[in-house]
Amino acid sequence: MSTPPDDDRTRLHVTATPDGTPAAPSSEQDRNALAVGARVLEFEILRLIGVGGFGIVYLAYDHSLERHIALKEYMPSSLAERTSQSHMAVRSERHADTFDAGMRSFINEARLLARFDHPSLVKVYRFWEGNGTAYMVMPFYEGLTLKQTLQAMPAPPDEAWLKLLLAPLLDALDIIHQEQCFHRDIAPDNILMLADGRPLLLDFGAARRAITGMDQAFTVILKPGYAPIEQYAEVATMQQGAWTDLYALASVVFFAINGRPPTPSVTRMVSDAQVPLALSAAGRYSADFLQVIDRALAVRPDDRPQSVAVLRQQLQLVAHKNTQHLASSPGPRATPVVPPPVTTSGPTNQGKSSGFKLAAGAAALILLAAAGFWMSRPAVVTTLEKRPVAAAPVASTVPINVPPAPAAPVDATAILGQIYAARNPDHAVNVTLPASEVHIGERLTMAITSAQAGFVYLLMVGTEGTDFVLLFPNADDTDNRISANQPLSLPRKKWHMTASGPVGTDRFVVIVSDVPRQFRDAGLRKGSLFADFPIGLVTQSVAVPSGVMPVFAGKADCARAPALPCNDRYGAARFEISERAAKN
Image 1 (tube, rainbow, N blue to C red):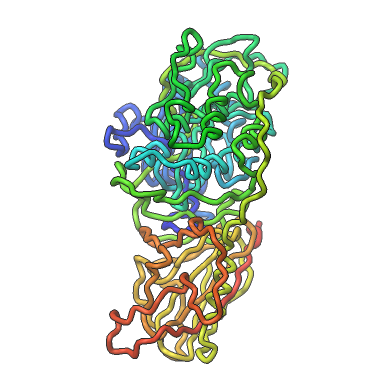
Image 2 (image 1 turned 90 degrees about the vertical axis):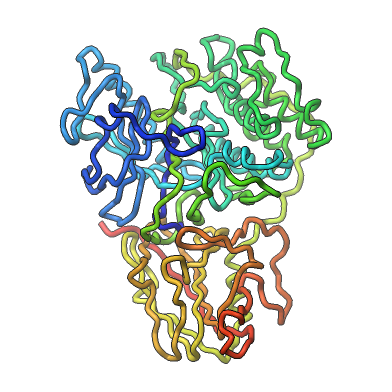
């Protein structure tokens, strides 16, 4: 379940001004964009959030599932133009084959992305052709790019932080590499840092599935400093593969440590004057860590680790489907150059946003989206030929023992159990649901009854048990008082909950406290509507001794209700709601 006003969001990688704010589209872009209020099937255009040379991305409202999404439209502006309110046509017949080839690539890209399912990979809900073009629908995420995150830090992140960044990204790359698909455009501005600390790979437009026997020429967008030598030119002895993405990922680490990208690989191929990290960053990071990153930055492909598994072993990381998320604040930090995310990102179920859609009218401050190749700004453009993927050269490895698996991340579901166990058993609290199962797309309501008057707090853990959200009270509905034996129906008119998938179970605890409570000690982070707990920061056992109040249950804030007797007691009820597939 994603907590923001417009859950399940995709952010677009938009052209931005120097201060990080989205730049206004040009008049030509405006002419090609769909008008606000236009409908494409059940999707209503709300606003334009990104325009590039190959496509346009809109914030749209899905009237069928009642949620906000990102709608991406194939629109190569040099080849086509809008001829009516919705229809698109090629500018000249001589461009027809090129336009059609691009649209096939767009659809194939969407089909491929729709197959992947990982918390650090962008999800595609659906795609189709129509109006002379093609569309894909994606979630609408919110956050800062990794580049912005690093620039906001007063000092480079430490090794532990970098490994927490690398772990989920390597797991995500492992998934796509198993399908012989390679990202080919990894860079700090193509990684979105979600509010829960999860890194999300963006700009998959450069990714193409390697199909044996294909020899169709195509254009690739390159970023100097992050693109390895094999992406610059057709060299029979330098095939692209997993090692291509690993070079780019190592370049991201280089940028995080040094504040600048590595020397472009074409320059290094002629004369490599780049100082190895093992020398330039010695003493700040372990020698083993720096040597592994240097090895992944080798100019020649066969000198690098040849697979995610090899690099993961050398970094002493363990593969996890669900990795611990990065802290939003890994240490003292400067004021971000872009306003921080106004919403929180909810838990996932192997990549799917879990639970319910919670909507409100709060506007998003940051518009960063998974725009892909269709939205990229090329720094260097070169033409490559699709070729069969070569067998990986023999891996260059060092004898490093694989460490034992780290302690499992905290299961927020267990914390809910502790909150419930610490309740006052004499204070009865009950929750009535119309049904314990709902179909995706259906709205959710509940009624809470308490034997004593008090203050209600509704907490939820999503399907993976790693994200922990305070749903009520929230920014739009702060009156959380409840009268004795008088049902309180939630959500009220100011906000609502809609099951938005995937199929799975979300878990809830309702606290009714004698006095208002505060959750500062639990690290509660406010969003534009809902707040969440940084459960990913907890690394120790969450066992709570008998008689000790769990920190995530909050503490009595007696100053907010001086007329009431001060105590830390509360009643509680817990319940689950299972989501089933949408009705046909």
